[in-house]
Image 1: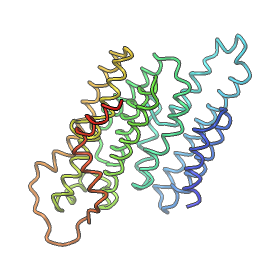
Image 2 (image 1 turned 135 degrees about the horizontal axis):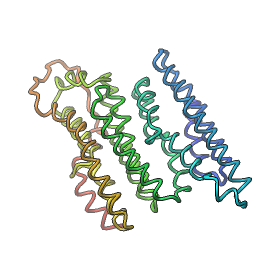
Image 3 (image 1 turned 180 degrees about the vertical axis):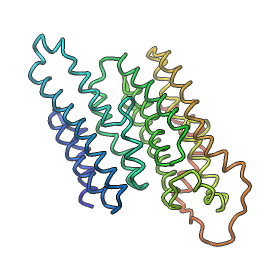
Image 4 (image 1 turned 120 degrees about the vertical axis):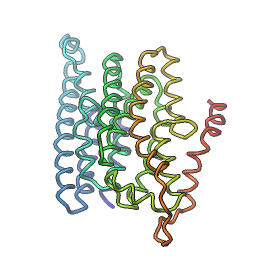
Length: 330
């Protein structure tokens, strides 16, 4: 519990800091608090994932500290104009996030963790680097390449996956490209996107955690349970893919609206086209639940659907009305 609290506190230190050095200290506190949480489950896979996470995050922290020192020492000299300090700083934060082309560590670390730690890794751990990244966006062309590459890699490499944890990691890489595109001029849209993405991720991972599912073949066991659970599973994955009228469509619609408003026409078009590739592996999971005719079990061992969980999923279904209401206040 102490390390979990320290993880939350360190993130708050990062996003509220007034200097880069304080933000770096917050990121290091966050790393040191995450490692015991990853090793909490005593098996070789979590230990391996913890070591990979530690090595990558340490490399990124060294790059970040180097760029901070260079910035403080040479910000008023001619050397600052010639040396790409901002490129190093941005690359270190992109490495911490796990965006392409520095994304190879994220699926490997994710595959060694349980679902509760995956939820932390793919949602909460993105907050501090994303906020810091929003302060450093100056080279639009550089970030446009990163966004397109992340979207493409997240879609293409997720197509061949049978491991659900890796699939969710590639999904996170794809969604990070959309979130980064909102940071060009609007932190509010990023906040909408992140909250909705985290909510949908939570709904999906609760089902995976409850039924101890780690591979696509394990989904066959899920389809033998009640129809409500099958509907919720299908609905959440379609929402994660951004299909209307589900809740996941709302942040993507806001992002496209924002990009077109600020004349990022090519970037918005490429994001829409590439997202149709990532939609394939979402549809592959949901199509099975629709097409397979499975008998409901008569045993009372299925998931007891709590009211709050059902209510959150109901919002996913009714989000088209929610979009129409919210747009009147924007």
